Amino acid sequence: MPGLSLWITPSDAPQAAVRFRAALDARKFSPRDQTSIVHTAEGLFVGHTGRPTYPVQTITAGARTITLEGRIYRDDVAAVLDDLRALADALFAGDTLPRDRLAAWTRANEGEYVVAMLDPTARRAIVFADPFTRLPLYWHRSDAGVIISRECDVVVRLSAARQFDRLAWAQALVFRHLIGARTFWEGIDHAPGGAVFDVRLDGSRVKAALHTTYSIQLRRERRPRHIRRRLCRRTPRASGPNTAARSLLPALPGKRILSLSGGKDSRVVAGLFAREKIPCVAATYLDAHGVASADAVAAESLAAALNIPWRLYRLGQPSPDAEQFLLRALSGTNSIAHGSLLLFLEQLVSDWGDDAIYITGDGGDFIFPDLRPAESLTIDQYVAGLLRPHNKATPVREAESIMRLPPGALESSLRDRLNSYPEKSVAQKAVHFRRYDRGMNWLFPGEDRARFFLWQTSPFNYFSIFERTMRVPDAVKSRDALYVAFLRKVSPQAAAVVEAGLGVPMSSPIRSLKYRLKRLAMSLPVPMTETIRRMIKGRRPPFAMPTDCKAVIDAKFASDDGFGELVDRAALERRLPHMSRLEFENLWTLVLLHQMYMERAG
Image 1 (spheres, rainbow, N blue to C red):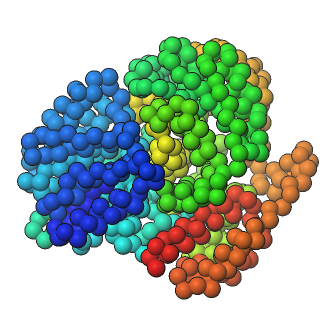
Image 2: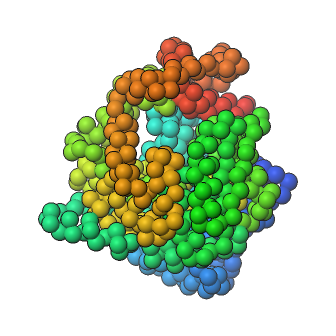
Image 3: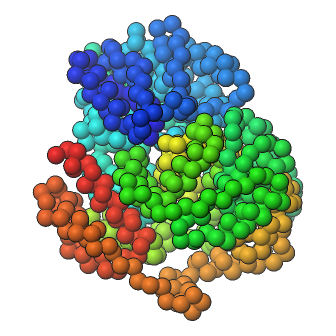
């Protein structure tokens, strides 16, 4: 991933500078990529790697250096840099970090960014991110120092991490993403939203503190029923996110490419662009199997209705190098099954250049709908629902056996995570989990995949829009009521186009019924849904694991690279014949990840 890296270490030997440079050089993926070293002295090492158009810049303020990665969506860039210099003066003024001032600054400056401030005289580094840490950060602390990087691989290289985290691997098999601060390596953590690092060198010691400028706390609604009914009638007309979206979208600089599907999220963004007359082009991709053909038809109709230029990209099979690219680039946080998306991104760059901005509707399904469980649940019931088997993941007990974990380890880790949230209501804990943990560990690393090619953003992950939509009562969001009302207000033309997932327009009077039926179908047990699906579409051909993949797994167990100590062979071989394609892709990503890092270590 292009991005910023810091290493604060008591060792100021020349070898430390060489190691730091080598770790960054290893992150070059094309001849255009460059490594830039900002500082390598006094035990403070700062640098970044990426293509020339990647948004990262360094300014000075006396002896201090300030490096900004990402984008802050304000029209006056010079004013942003002046504000950062003034903020640095305040942050380095005393021993106690003025966190309230920093929190106010990050909330007032919308965007996706990481800022690293370095004061060589004080031998101190302060690193902070936007309220959601939209650009994922990874870090490690030991006697050898503190490593903070946008790239997990840099942290692995500099920390010489060797132990894989069994529980994290099991989480990936079951949930397809990690939970909380875990990464695939023991001792390396994923930084939280609103992360702030304050790191100081004190002689031969490194003192590090991790703070946050923002933490989500969702409050349970306690409004009388008649007030709730009035809010249900009034709030959609107020359209809370509307003002924020209108003020933010024009601040996106340069060429804008809108990812357009046939669903709800991207059409809301398209409707806003059309209404505000913001120049853009829309792009839709169709993979080699034509899986999303209904989306492509709806996207074309939507672009025509909004008078937005539209292009369909027909993708072939991903190249054999796609798996290795995804593994190297994202250290296992993206499935190797996403190789076809690389073709799409390459074609976008070919047509529009790598300085374009790729805008999606990611996150809309986390802020507009009612995310509460359909019924009142205890914490145990909600955990059991999250662990319910489905055809995309390994069953819980089998994942625990495969990763040599005691029974109940996954359930315990999930319950501990939910209990750590500040909310008292299980319903609000459920919303917190879906919005925060899945967003942090699924959506945000997915955005990083695109940033190897061009900048990606989504208005629905902006802090100001999140704050507004979270203030809307859940009852207003129920059955997509806020979604539909918002789109009708923003763009009646977009609301009148058929929604691919339901087969009716969002403005249709029968949409609510079809939505409820779909939610009901999704809540049914897996055996029942599979039976219904077979009745409608026929029996699904069983997935057959490629023989060359099985040969690689057998070779891994036969080798002495530690795979057999990490993974239980008997448990895995019991599960392999029953795996779906998606389940196997999760496993195969982990197998190749282990192989890549063990080959490097060897």
